[in-house]
Length: 294
Image 1: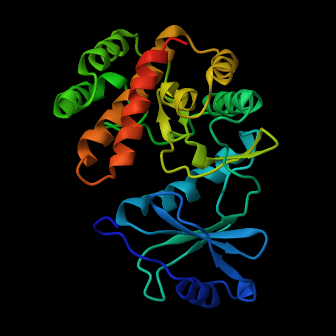
Image 2 (image 1 turned 180 degrees about the vertical axis):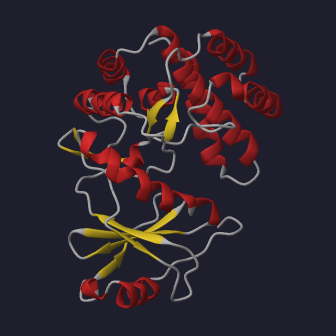
C-alpha cells in the first residue's frame, strides 16, 4: 500500500448503504478484486456497483464523474459508469463515493483477436472528440493530454536517470522524433485519458463499455493512442489507426506519450516495484521504440 491509501471493508459498505440508501439495503454486497490503483469496487446486487476512493488523490474523480459522465454518456456508442447516486462519508469511511451501474463484459487480453475491438474503440474516441466542450476542464500541468512538449524536461530527466538500464540512445532518438511532431492544431477535445485494457469491457471481441474516467478532461487526443502499443497486435494497430484517421504528427505524439508515461513511471518507482515489473516495462518501452512506425 502507498502512503495515504486505506482498506475499505464490505462491512463499511453495508453500513453506508444501510444509512444512506436504505432502498438498496437488502441487496448483497460483494467485494471485487483490486484491479486498479485508486478505487475499491463492490458489486451491489445484480445491477449496481459501489465505487469508493481508497486514497486522497482519487477523491476528486467523484466530483468529475458526477459533473460530466451523465452529460457525456448520451453521445457515446457504449455505456459508461455515470453515477446514479452520490454517497457521503460515514461508517469510518472518510470521503464521498458513488453508486454506478454494473456494466457487463470482461477486460480484453493481449494476444486475442482484437481487430473488431480496435475499430469499436476508435469509434468511441471519435465520438468523444466530437462532443461539444460544454466548458469542461482543460488539461494542464503535465497531465495526460497536455501538449507533449510540456513533458520534455520530465521525460529527458527520466531517460538520464535510467542510464544504461534502457537503450538510452534509441529511446532518446524516438523521443526527439516525437518532439519534432506538430502540435494538435485544433481546440482541446474530450479525452478518456487512460485507455488501458483494464478500463475496457468486451464481449465476443467487441467493445461493450468503457470505465474509470479518472483521466477525463479536454486536450490533445494523441494520448488516446496508447492501446495501439499496450494492447493491440500489428493487425489491430493498423485497424485502430485507420479507423481513427489521425495524421502522422498525432501518431508520433501518441507513441511519444506512451514513452513519456512509461519512462517516468519506471524511473520514479524503480526501487519500489518488482524486478518482473521492471523487466516488463523495459520490454514494453523497447517494443514501442521498435514498432512506433508500424
